[in-house]
Length: 250
Image (cartoon, rainbow, N blue to C red; front, top):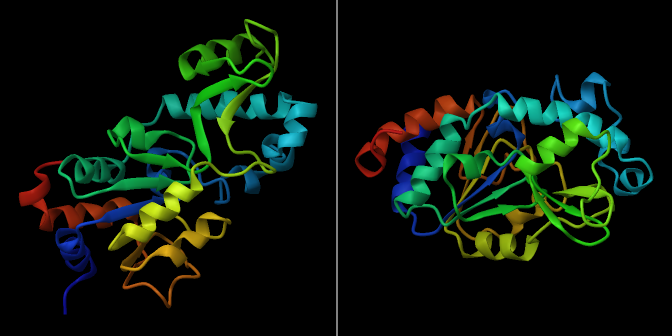
């Protein structure tokens, strides 16, 4: 009987249309806590998630979000993409990955080198003025966030909002994500327990093999072709061993 890492490598080698969905678990080894994990915002009580990520609350008082954002940006500045981020970037580079769908806002897939990315929940790397629509990149926003308690637009003084999806807003490019999964013959679900709607409905569009990799349980346990409950980076390091001729050194 094949071990899980060798079987996953074979699935990838045989696939012509591989798509990956990632969640917070792929970034924890980079030093970014899972928001719902033991040291996450929902657990430690330092911030009220409803005040930080609720759209109406942000409009009424953006200070709680920007207090959180200062700490989150400092965290991002001190971390690098994980081995698994780099693994998926290499898969795309050699033509074996059609796209990444992510629930994360940390932009580590971009930093690793992936190009075809659907950021369901947006990204911290872009912001825009709610009044005039002027766009701000993270470099400029860093200056504003650390110099101003609440960043406002240089052009019209309107409130600047990060391009991330708050509670009360629709996720981004979901129809594209549905199509990507529907056309796939291998769907890798990595680092997410699939508790959050509508990302958890994407599995319903899959017509091919499904591989679930991550610590903890998932509602998909009975439906996947391969279930791997272990450290994500350790697993994909072993998978890459069987794909060395295809991927080279990562």
